[in-house]
Image (tube, rainbow over all chains, first blue to last red; front, side):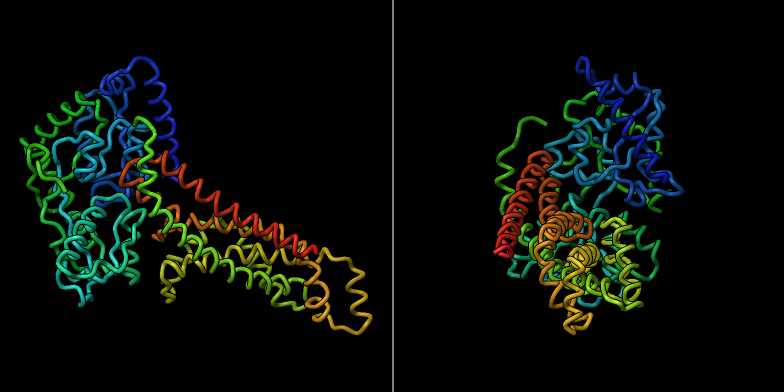
Length: 278
Length: 217
């Protein structure tokens, strides 16, 4: 029910947004100020970054947004949207920015403008606690692996499979692509799949929420991945504003405090988008 | 995003053919199972078996009263909780068969009841039992009337199979979505997807017309 109201809100916001873009090609930042709201696109099914609790979207990402929107003199409106197609939706002006634990990848960086990294997105493998056939990442060969459709993990496991194959091992027996990650965890418990690949910070929370059910191993990627906020290519001014804000939060320790709050530990992130991307 | 990207449509074509094969596999399995269930339930609804009749009515009531998507989620997520561990593919087949079985049962019932009462009277008067009348007199005659609504149901079933994309089955719709997620080209790929479905469904419609004609001769 509450989700529905959020969605209708999103619809009207999108309409407003469209109406706003009719005239001259205004800069998104000016537009946001004029409108009085910053519309943020996210898929709110990704603990602890953004998820529904008591009908409200909360998490690390909403907390960061709450810290910088007052500086624009506007309010934030969080729009829950499907992960699959979130980038086309950004360009269709359904929202002004994507803040949705989006891993900075080579492919995405061609399509959108990324902010500086604001969280570690390294991927790990989640297994059932009783799993004894998979000891290292290489044992994924011949197993069924689950990821979210369009996620960075979906690309990472593809690269890893190529590595397995070039080492003379068979690839996965199947890859299941889910709408949301929670369904993949469920299927892992139901033994429909053997492993789920996702970012470490999320997996830690999954393990905490379901004690004794899962275990975690690494080794699926050598490249450290980071999360960034995604802007439309032309929104350079908007991006540099957000980068300033993020740099400030990193410097004064606010970012670390939020990481402590949501992940239970702090993360090392670089000050700019790294050269080597997953 | 700028112009229409034809290259991505070519890129997607082989993946989508694989997806189309899965869609066909699931649809055929679900159709076979659903027709069997529907036929049995339809025959029960015109019989004089009180208890099975009530069960069939409850089943049809449920199928008609709930969205196919909800039925799919129930089969996929609820059955494992009570000890049935089905693979995604089997869950998809079971869910679609469950859904179409209910509708086919109604189609069969309507078909049987549409045959002139004189046929039943004649059959009974030459000493056939109720069961024999239904199986050997009413059912063969109703086949021709059943074919058009059954075709509709088959088409609905093929289209409903796109809902299985949400339970991690890489059928036709999912195969397109995977590439959309990778290449960020929803317009091109959903357009291509529509063409794939049109082709599949045109073939089905053509086949059904052919069957109908055969039954006329």
